[in-house]
Length: 267
Image (cartoon, rainbow, N blue to C red):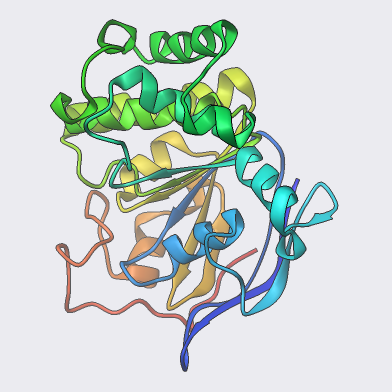
């Protein structure tokens, strides 16, 4: 179980995340929604400890994640995998080599730097790619792939970390509708089949309702919604974000509208 207790992140005088408390049971698929600048990415980066909280604590299975350093922090990042909007692949390397970098958390540093993977590790990487219909491209350079294919490679890389949590930071923001469905189907399958907890930042209310067990809504860094997708009715979406069903939570949708942080309906 993941627990956040009063987590705050300050950048100067600005509170990007403002006193968020959450409990996420094992195996849940959580959609994190909110306008750009609402604190979604900062929240996920704090959980992974790419950013440190200014205040508050983050716990996983009783361990205080905010106090981890050195080897223990590296082990936490293996257990808590990140998937990024920009894919973060090494374009000049082939697909399988990119995937194998997910094993770097489990291998001695010298072996990871030399890319000396065992037969079993390579089999694990190919199996992850096969599950995402990408094994046939294992020898192809990553920078020759489409955006959707690159994101599937990034998911395979996260999967062979053998994580207990996957944090997906706007993984479909730069994808077309077909690849959006492929990537979201893959994340949902990983959640359902392997029981891995998934927290996914999303801009589309419709996709959030379709794929997630629970929605967490942020506005101005504060938690303003925490409920099942069915509770995010059109009227609630209008009250929180000024949006209609099908619109997108981003600057390209309604830049004139500002979320209402004072309207807190979180459970």
